[in-house]
Image 1 (tube, helix red, strand yellow):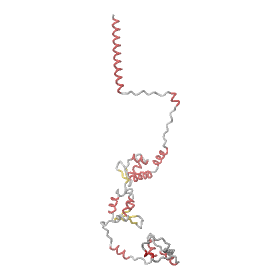
Image 2 (tube, helix red, strand yellow):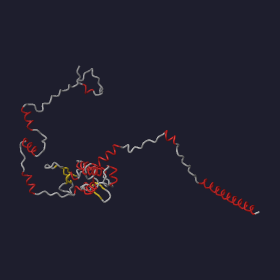
Image 3 (tube, helix red, strand yellow):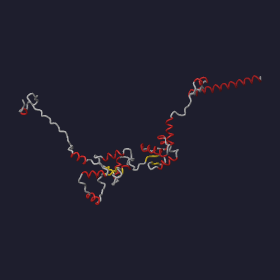
Length: 288
């Protein structure tokens, strides 16, 4: 009897164990309906790998670009500074060190000499994070340019305005045209540099009495040859050549224009087709 009871107990335990297994399987099937289980990765067979070998990995297919980057970073500090300043001047935007590296391959952050020289350059403005171009006069358009020139009654050198903004030279020409005449562009005979003067009646211009007297006391030569010589001494090209004209006049070759042939007047005859026959007074003297 004892052995029979033990067998029944083992049988009951097996039934409970089977019941719990079935319950867990049922719960797992419900979960699998909600979330998909990824399929296990199957490793390729060794025969497949032997037939299709993996291509060798190349370090770079961009050799020319890498060589260019290497040449830029090995170039002198001055050459790298010029490259960065050209970038800032043409774009007129502010760049971080990383952006400069991406744009022109100059490693500002990794090269201490380049960084210090760039931060101290008078043409560069560095705010602690970004680099930008620094012109001599901070003007951005034609209105600000005209306002600046009007503050210099004695004139301002055009060379100091060339880097203000990209179209500054075009604006200077527009303001100096006869249509506008807002400024005057005159050349300095000593340095041959152009100077911009304001043409504004509100700007007071005072001329010394000594300068007026000196101007009025200068007596111009009466002979055009002397005038032309004085112009050439001061670096100006005369519009006339008096010596050549006088030689041609002596030889009788001055302005010998060919005579124009006179056109024959068309005469009206009886054979002429008349379209104004209703005006007989016009045709009284007809040639037979």
